[in-house]
Length: 214
Ligand code: DX5
Ligand code: ZN
View: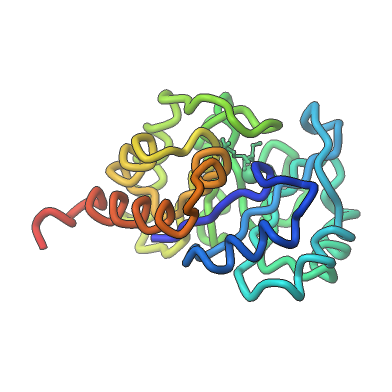
């Protein structure tokens, strides 16, 4: 199980201290939302910020590109220190599939041809663009489908969920086969981030398919 606090919910006036908080929390990844004001109606931050934060943390930097022209941004974010870059499958076949995110209205079948080539299948559980939105329950069948494909084809990609993930929705996603939990508002909203990460990890581990039998 991978716990990934989303920096979008951090206090941008003191990012270095927020990253230190995540470092000390026992989380696995730092999720970095990159928004271009075109693919989504919001703007966040760019490679310069990622580069500035990179020396402050040993965490896996999970970069989520919500941008219309990812091709021109892959290199800058890789240079800035991204550990993994998430692209949106909605952008079409021109984009090299590194990792796919599936928006709520997008059919999960769209990623099927790429399953053998990806490290991570990221399923959006809100419409991308903003933190603090409510989880969309209709996305749960996509998680089940992604888990069934992984099992049937003996593949190893991680199944991540992003958006509206709290202590309750994370458990529902874990039950359906998700193993990577990106959470902004819920985790950053806790005074004790470490305790929140531990609590979330414990809950999703217990909800994991098969966990009750062991
Ligand atoms: C939304 C972003 C999410 C967001 C999650 O477009 O992809 O990563 O930060 O934030 P919460 O947990 O607040 O929904
Ligand atoms: Zn994200």
